[in-house]
Image (cartoon, rainbow, N blue to C red; front, side, top):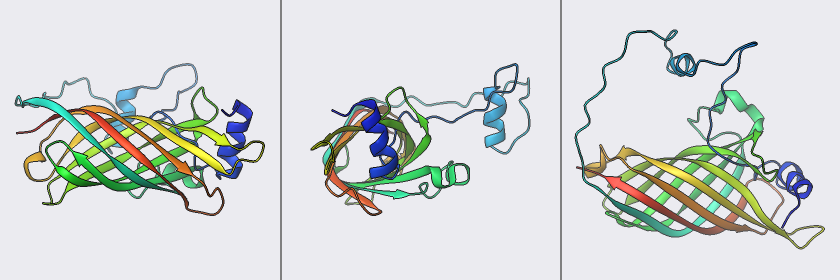
Length: 227
């Protein structure tokens, strides 16, 4: 396993910052002498003004049956510089972000044989307590052969699990321990809800050039509620 200094060196130089990842967060500035107001920050993100003391109406949520959801399969991963298209980080991180694109066939509950496509933006400036991990978040879509799909918001820890041989690695094991939240979809999944975990691992054997390509597997497990 890499020591912290080795992990840091790989994230910043050998992998050109593309393998540095961690828990999905929105960084909120803290004003001098106080704490940032989360509600105000969320209003700013939505283009609104300062927080109002008037309570907004709570939307009615109809009860939907909650069932187990899984999706597993083989994936190909591509790591390139810059944020994913449409990411909140596009204008904020500039060259301090990397985009991890994931695609591959999966077998998913309620969808059968499907295709997973996802893009996660890695913020290279926001590290976790582990020197070989950094923050990442984004979206993914699982699409069945009939066109029905589920959209997932994904975020979590992305880390260098191992690198060998030392002292000059030629192979890196890249792992992610993430969470997901269902954000609807198409067909019968238009108003779908749910949450759970996303775990993936892949092997990268070419540490030069951009994009950096890896291959591995993904396991998604949690809940899914649909009408």
